[in-house]
Length: 116
Length: 110
Image (cartoon, rainbow over all chains, first blue to last red; front, side, top):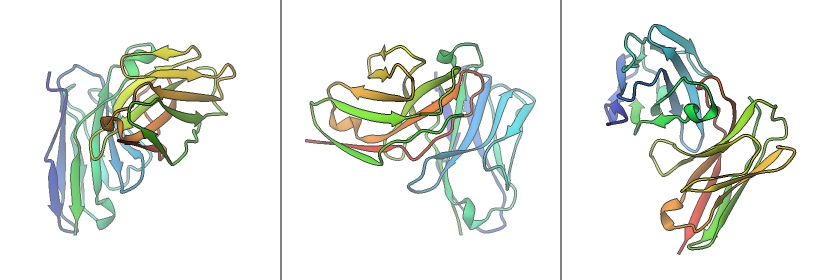
């Protein structure tokens, strides 16, 4: 299994540009999430999905859109990039089954985004 | 989800045990204690979790106090590769919304 993959690894945008960060997993996980991590800080939840067709907002959703048309993919869209969105973005997935074991989250390698 | 408190940084000598504390005094009965770590610039990695019993796996041991208000992650023989930020997270079993604090930066010294 490739696990959780993210593309691109690095991206530089100009203010106002839009783009989509890609996330895919091949573990048949129902739960998928997007986090951002600013320098020296912990991760903050942007959006999450409990299954195909179902998404919800996390702690910092403004400026981002998500959709979940398949179990495998969970893209994150920046609608109009701003310098405040300069960050490292991590995608994660986990099982949805019962019991604490199934809530182990698997993280991707991250996308490093700079907005000028 | 309950809030956790961790020291911002700790040092440990290579080969010695690293004991990382976490306070979670407002933990509720259905919340588990999870530990993740993040090695520089990489995605976080799951280490271990527990409810009220002590747990051990190939990576670490987790000791939870009887009142469940605090816990300790133990890396029995720390190596240089264990240098990372360690996050203690309290979460219900349902859902996948991890709430990360700022964690503890563990530095293992040769």
